[in-house]
Image (cartoon, rainbow, N blue to C red; front, side, top):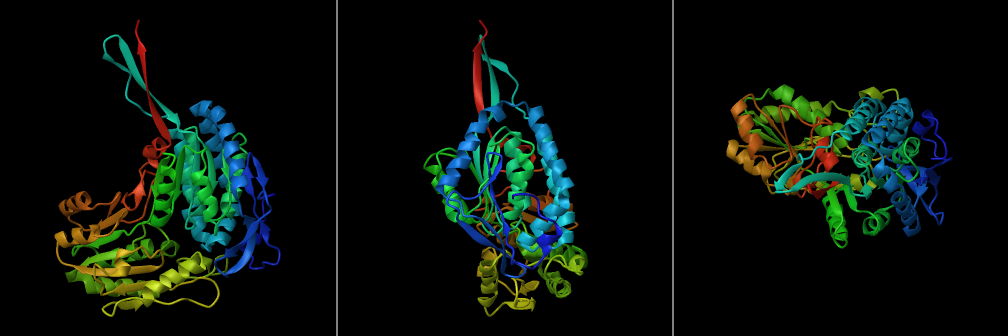
Length: 494
């Protein structure tokens, strides 16, 4: 980024002096080869605040060449050496926390306080987890499965990894990508979303302080840049967090060269509230997990199914909570009082608004349902009831601060409706009945089932979905293993 910005200046609304972002290639900041740039908009104002490289084939070629050149030495580094590099990266992230928070807040519109409390500590913890996990890759013990011959398994890095991250958690998703990849001995070319490149560009600088040149590279750009990365012959693996549409495109393109693919895509998490749940406490927890980050979370608690006997009380409680929540621009005197910031971009605001505009006549907007202000991409906390299973807003991911509520009768219907979407990422069950909770955790077709909670993730446990939510795991030892390949070695005892 050409030198660290003053943290306070990133929160300014003055855009006359646009920040200049750079790619990070072979250990150095770099503009696009042809000098092309695009403007990055502040979602709290809708106005430009920075420019970023619009990378094309020459830029992707250069980054891939740097990663390929760096791979043999990084692959052959000991796990302990890779661990030390990751630990130093985590330390510098903590040392520069306020700078990263300011950059991320400007890029995404997230409240400063929430970014400080909910993201930076978790990022550092996850990096340190993978630093330790690098030294604990497990495999089956060696043995003689044929007389006179010993077999054993080597677990190796796959090579150069092309990674694409989304705009809802730019820093966090970068960590989920690079930390296991580097820990396993791979080298990386990472492209952030075109709307949120700033924090990843800064991470490129930080990581570059602690790994050899070319081990970690950042290439900014648009969808065409991403396609060039996926179709490039160098990467052995492609990893993306994004929409189902993007995942299908990536999988199709990667299939042409039989690249390994890791996909973390959309979600439509069911939140199943049974009649024995504590209605006020559950409604409060659902509101927090549904509206956090403006609902721009693939695991967000935005599709609630409530037992008929407590449905009306739950809807009233949830709507009351929603009406008391506030959205607004980060960094002001009221930052600590904000539940969330703006939606990320104009297209996302139009998408969320469109879902509400197209609601069927049988739906009732209990709270919100409208844009907030004329500047920026803010949307009110919204609760919609009276919905049916086949309604568009129930079946499709809104990715906004909109919680839908359906009334169900009986456990069987709850399971049927929960599983009756194309996604399979996350879910939650709210009940005091242990047996019911266990039955539901077995029956729900989702990669994660929370019981009497929703949205916490820990580095030690895997995150990843089924069906159209993709395949592969982030976090945990499973996430590390996804960035490895398995080789059988057999040797004669003679």
